[in-house]
Amino acid sequence: MRSFLVFLQKEWTELVRTKKFFILLCIFAIFGMLGPVAARYMQEIIIMAMGDTMPITVPPTTWVDSWGQFYSNLSQMGGICIIFLFMGCIAGEKQSGSAALTLTKNLTHTSFVLAKFVMAGVIFLTSLLLAALICFGYTYFLFGYAGEILNVLLGVMAYAVFTVTLLAITVLTSTISQSTTVSATLAFCGFIILSVSGYVPKVGFVLPGSLLSKTVELSSGVHYYGMMEATIISLCISALCLYLSIHALKRQEI
Amino acid sequence: MTYAVETVDLTKQFGTYKAVDNLSLKIPAGSICGFLGKNGAGKTTTIKMLVGLAKPTNGSIFLMEAERRFGHCNNGNIGYLPDVPNFYGYMTAPEYLDFCGKLYGMKGNKRKGRIDELLKRVDLLGVKTRITGYSRGMKQRLGIAQALMNEPNVIFMDEPISALDPIGRHEVMEIIRSLRGLVTVFFSTHILSDVENVCDYGLILDKGKLLADNTIENIKEKYSSNIAKIRLCSSADSGKFYSLAKNHIDLAIEEKSPVEFLLRGTDIRVLGKCIPSMLSEAGIALESYQAYVPSLEDIFLEVTANA
Image (cartoon, rainbow over all chains, first blue to last red; front, side):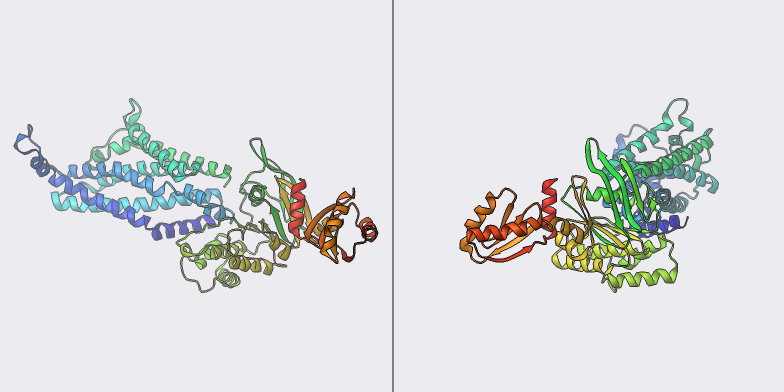
């Protein structure tokens, strides 16, 4: 436990000093602002682009569109940011040789992997909460209403569970890969599979992808059957990825 | 006698290639041991197995008489310096050592005291810059400091001097020399003169096989026992002497200079009798005759050539 906390502290120092924390915070904060702005001015933008030739009438946008834009941005770019920032979390240490030094100093493989995952999770959740807070405030400012707090939190939680699963997959791909490039490629494949899993017929509604596709509905107060199952399955996948990651690292020659 | 490092039939095989072949060695505690071998001899693989980072195909490892197993890198009584040490570049040297000390569970004042002591030893005390700006030599010195942080019984260093300039090499060798009596040092290198100057124990590895394993003194004695060094009074006699010795069935001759030769026979006592009489018969004046103590380089070249 002691070595886990020491390594966790080192991870925090690393994420702060290498500016990864601030990069993620800034990117998510920008997403938080962009969502409401894009929603508020979407009608004007479409009319400006199409002019009088537009065959249909564009309905006026609402606060729900603000969350729609927010999650639309996060579901693509948010995931890519997570992959790029953490693809080398373990592969990079193995490649550079720093893992060989730390793993010969009373640091267990389990603590090594878990500390990486926990600290990445902490900075992701902090960034997500900041982004959601900005989006909520700005939506309220532009539309006069931003939804029920509990519903908004439910939407944020669904996205967080999905992305934590992606983070666990990224940690696993980083462990089993010898280079960051391979790790990124594998993690990206995992991201695609995870995202489309919600559309698998009959079972898609309990798979992680459904959490991503239902964030807007959840924020607007429309709950869906299967959310609890999808959350449990996502957390199980995360736990499995971490277990496999620890197991793989223990068997690897560094 | 306590052995700091002991291996029994240690083998590492990659496919059909044996990188380390049935290595059995015993290093007495407290020695400074030089692990010699050409590039690709199997030194790095052996050290990685010893510290628990590589899995032996076969064989056992004992460090301070406790068995060492692959994946169990958490034994607090060893220190390790890889061939290219890579630290967290965003830290300073005291921060990195503090991180290491905390991993070992060292408490506040003891940890701080140890950090200052080690930074002084490796001449990095007062260096406030981040590690990313360090020279290769500074990184090696920090590498030694981190390997000593937990006051280990054995410290393993993989080619700590190979990529350093002469000044950096001298500094690192002086640090290694200063560890005598404090800790067992096991370091690999292919710079033989450094081993000769600093080590009291030597191992020679070639193609994964152990060719020599003894104190430096004993290795030299073993390989010097049948060599005589001859110095002639005049270089005019050198051609005559060379052909005489060459034709002698029991002698191998090596010319060191026009008047100096090394003669290798089967027994130094026989050499001592036959050479003076051979020279006397041929009318060649002998300036000096002595049993030759070869350098470690001579021995290394000889044993690896015969392997």
